[in-house]
Image (cartoon, rainbow, N blue to C red):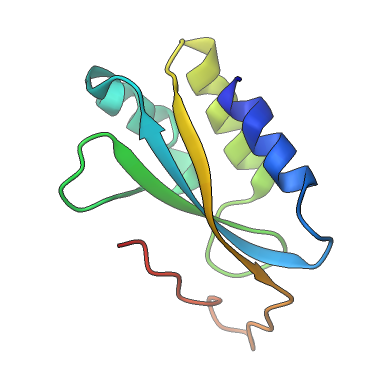
Length: 110
């Protein structure tokens, strides 16, 4: 399944009060690392320690630290367009988080 479609399905499957999501993207081919990182730059990818082909990124629905869901979907569509494949996993979901005007919850990525 295309990464952008998989992401969209995951978003649609969430309860309406979701506020923050943490995803991991594991590339199928380590040689696509540099191009994938460039295409996904707006999603503020974080490398997983010791992993060359595993990224983590956050998505925020309303406010807080994390990329806007349609932005992430368009970045993943760019990966699909150049045949960069991988597995997209939803690691953590937070619901109805009151950020108290801060950057939002801190989600560990290790």
